[in-house]
Amino acid sequence: MLRVAVVGSGPSGVYTAQHLAQQREVPVRVDVLDRLPCPFGLVRYGVAPDHEKIKSLQGNLRTVLEDERIRFLGHVEAGGPELPAHRLLELYHAVVYCVGAARDRRLGIPGEELAGVRSATDFVSWYSAHPDAAEERFGLDAVGSAVVIGAGNVAVDVARILARGVADLLPTDIPQTALGALTASGVREVHMVARRGPSQAKFTTKELRELGGLSGVATVVRPEELALDPAYADPSAPLPGPVRRNVEVLRGWAGAPGGPALRRIGLRFYLRPVEVLGRDGRATGVRFERTVPDGRGGVTGTGVFEEVPAQLVLRSIGYEGVALPGLPFDPRTCTVPHAAGRILREGVPAEGEYVAGWIKRGPTGVIGTNRPCAKETVGSLLADAARLVSRPRPADPLTELRAAGLRPVEWRGWLSIERAEAELGRSLGRRSVKIPDWSGLLTAAGGR
Image (spheres, rainbow, N blue to C red):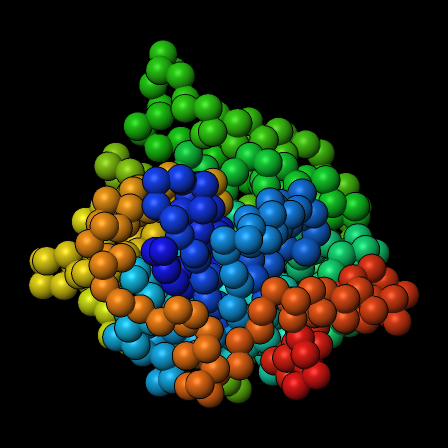
């Protein structure tokens, strides 16, 4: 029997477990380990609470984790002092790391250290009830204007949540603390700003359109900022579908008459942040330099500057992988070096160690991109299976984990958390509401 540990229970980890369980050539048992007591990774802790359709993907991931050949073990930190990488290899024939990209990129400009400058990752974790964010505070009552720097789906998400009416969030599982802060919010202007033009934006048209459908919110675009990159300027060459659809939506908003609104979302292009302005240690605005396309897909500065007032500045310019203790790491790509998913140590495949997901390929693609990525890694693992399974391993690694002092949250513990969150929602007159802190989650998982 081939015993495999998959580290991470987000989409890449679950798809890896699914590919392993679905094949019939090699008898296998898979333990899906996660540092958190809850499964599903960014589907639970990264998808905005008002995106019910995407969050429903949890149902598909649940079906995989309920397979009798797969076991969920939460509250297990692989790579930590109690379970270092070499110990994992002593317990399992193979280990697949699917840990994502945990750190956001910084702007690298003066003033970024000011109070009120945060990462979109922090904001998402806060309104998604990630237990690591339990102590986070986003006081929005003194914020009249917010700037979101970036042009991807995460930037769209945080701009939408900042502008959305609280009544629309009541039916969601957003934690009560975040709901209360958004209820008291003073935000009236949200500026989503990109250094390049609309043809380079990374958001999807579906996400973009949602900004125009918010009750009481006006979406504002400046026609002069919708110039296309020279690569797309030839009228005889059709725009790629995603670019064309985004540009059509933006041009529609640019030509729409303005009207009264409780809040406004302004989409700005060709502005590069050069400094966060502040007073008394707090952010008061952002200075941007106007840019123009350089003809090679990038932009160049013009020496013309503009200041946008803001008491909250959220950077959303991408993610980076973080080095895992005991594993090789490429600081240039912020990924683990590999060949078709096999981890490389000094250029040589490491026996029994694999990667899948963002830590393998970088933070690219959508949730579905993890399927072929996981399939490639599993293919490599299965090709190595005959050699791997010949090495003696414990009959049940869970016994060894408990002996080491770990207290894994198994699937029944996760189901207890779900029941506790449903009860919390009922007590608040809402649907299921997420438990936002470690102690609450572990108590709900089994009276800890």
